[in-house]
Image (cartoon, rainbow, N blue to C red; front, side, top):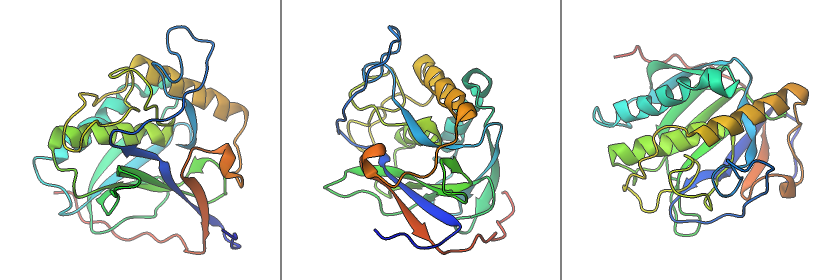
Length: 246
């Protein structure tokens, strides 16, 4: 895809999406306790800036009153290990929004068409970088309407928040060793609503690397996970006024 001149790059994280019953290649690591591809996910690319205070909005009417606590529970589970990961990133729920927001450090959780027979995605992260690098300026987590079970929804959100913090999928990892492996079936929880010790360790490594070097947005798809393809866009940043929390 030919790049446009723009100050905003839309990073569609399709390979960094939660899929049902899929597999992926593993990598090696010197660690004997959290081996990448076995107990730990590989370090990814896109992440919020260190110590970011991410404002989280849920699109009004997209989720039921029963489902909402599971979404918030996934946020809380990652907030609880923020210090341990070394990221300093905190996700602060702000209430409802009528549509996806594009304000600085805003994350919108919404419904959208994600699932298909070929890709089998049920959720995906759409991240946007103003400076064409790995730092997320605003993002959306899109959840397919087929995913309705509240507990499975919470597991899926914990997975997507992992992508927000630099983790890639690990479908070859042992079950329950990481939130970055897949749901075996749609609407069947995998009982992984919170990051594991290996997840925490890998986020810590990702943010150590970030302190040394912020990478530019890759132009070669071979450098990023399958399906992750930056797409340039001329859309300006706008800040829609969200609904008041209810």
